[in-house]
Amino acid sequence: MPHMYYKNNHTHNTRWQIAIAISFLLILPACGRPTSVTVPTAAVQSATTATAPLKPTDLLPSEATPPAATGKSLAGRVVRGTSPAPGARVELRKVDWRVDPSKNNVVASAVADANGQFVIENPPVGEYSLCAVWPNGEEHQGATPVVNIAAGQSLTNLTVRLEMMLPVVEPKTGDDVSGMPHLAWKGFSGVVQYRVWVIDATTAEFVLDEIITGTGLALQTPLKAGRTYRWGVSVYAQDKTELVTFKSWFRIDLLTGADSPCVETFERHELRQPYQKYNGQARYTLSTRELQDTLAVMGIRALCILPQLGAPFINADWDSAKQPSTKGRMISLGFENLYHGSGWSEGFVVYSTYDFATDSEYETFAKPEDPRVMPGMFEGNGVMGFVRVKPSDLGLGTRKAYLTYVFPFYEDYVAVVYSLGDYDAGADWKAIVQGLEGGAYPADKREGATLFDAIKSSIRFSR
Image (cartoon, rainbow, N blue to C red; front, side, top):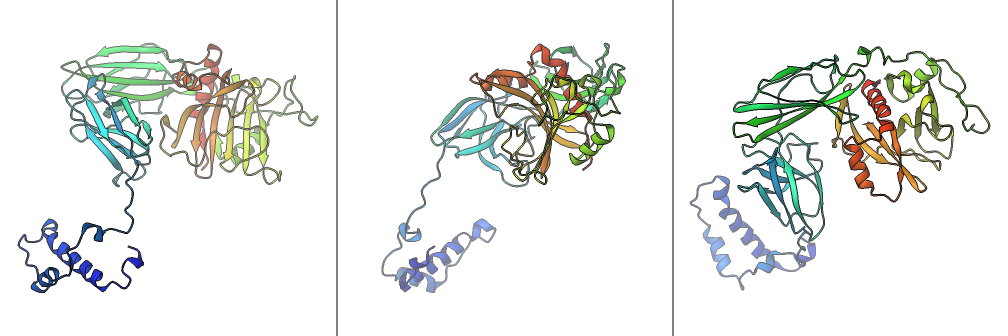
């Protein structure tokens, strides 16, 4: 309350004191006190002999606070698999709610009706996670989409999916397995059947899609070495409704196939021509020692370079310690077999500080404000990363689309990057990104995407 509100107004102060005293006594029952309350006689007499009764406006600041801006409504349907989820609770949560789940991060909520439909009236303006909770109070275990609400805006036809964690026996997410792995999980009561599927993460092709009644099976056809596979189990109840879909991934050990060994030693040699010389100087690949020194600066202890990539070389190394016009540090490690003679190679491993800036052409694959929990999260040898398709920052008429695996740290990041080709700069980039994120890579890019997925999985960090 502003100080001027009390100035030279003894009567007003007296009213405030009386009102506060009575209010405090009246709320005691709600705090667990006895419900029989005696108001002191003096206080009653003072209140009844005041010159004028208190008005509601006397208890407010001189200018009322305007109501917070809200959206109009959010409406949609909660489903478990393909069936409605009546009684499920839909919650709008602060986008960083996973940072401290013990806090009250819920800003609005609604309960789904018998058809799974829900409506949240007057949601607050801003960016929030749209989460769901099972009718029994169990947390949803899948992705939580982000919604951005503008003042007076209604969002309709939203779909909120409920997923429950299926206890997995083997393989665990991120495991390296043999070419014919055994898949196993713990069962649910009341389940009539399980649908098990395995897809190649690069081509999105199904290598297994089978319905069984047990809780495990062994693959009968060998999978390809050096590939990552995604697998899932859909659980069906007696009434054939889909209870839950579990999704995970595993990869076949790089060293189980003779066709994909890691190259461990390199000799320094001039890059194969034609290529653009830098200031008239030749460009060279890195020797084993030079590669190790470069990786050490990047915070990488080791990574697997497959023979299909060719020898490593430095696309660029911008260092503020050596170039006054540069801020921060950035190193891009390219590969000879993916180099067309100018610019950078079609795939590379990049290290960069968040404050890196230069007048030269460059891409930024992570920013300090990126949340530590994002869609597409994965664990790479104990370090959390995320995968996304990113349009290039620069382009004349065309723009590149990059498949990026990003490992964000607090002062810098490392990204494994592969170009998925050039696209019309004026095209519908939302549709392009959605298609590529779904695994619809151009045919001539599938093998390269597989190689860089293998690099991502092989990285060992020294921090």
